[in-house]
Every structure is written in structure tokens, then in C-alpha cells.
Image (cartoon, rainbow, N blue to C red; front, side, top):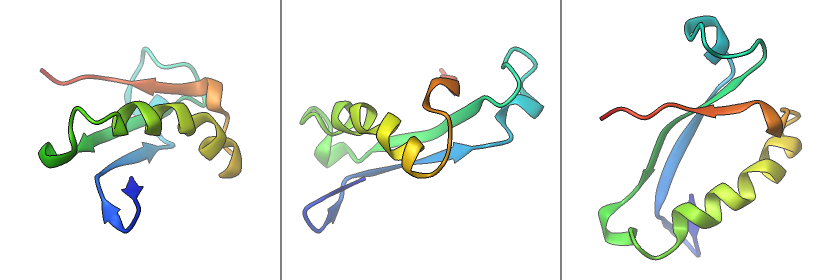
Length: 73
């Protein structure tokens, strides 16, 4: 995730998510390692990234309605 010329965070898309998570429907895509740097937290970057994600997935040829997120405590 980039704002201007500064990287503010990152994420990974796991296209094999359903193969390793039995609760996921076939074809599900995993949103993994979603991270915003501590210097940029609380400024809306995560929200902006998540709002832009469906269009990004379509641009990549991936179904935006098959996205899943797991959270590690």
C-alpha cells in the first residue's frame, strides 16, 4: 500500500487459501499479512485499501466476492 511515494503497508493474496482452510468455499482467496506501519496507523490507510480492494481484485482477474480474512490473536 503506497501513499504518494511512501509505502505505508502491505498485504498478500493467497489464491490457494481454500486448499489449506477447510471452512473456506472452493475458489476463496485469502487476504493475508494485512499490515500498516505503526507510523501510518490511525490515518485511514487500511480503510482506503480495503475499500479499493474489490476493484483491485477485478483488475487482477480475481473474484472480489470470494475474499476471506483470518485473524491471528
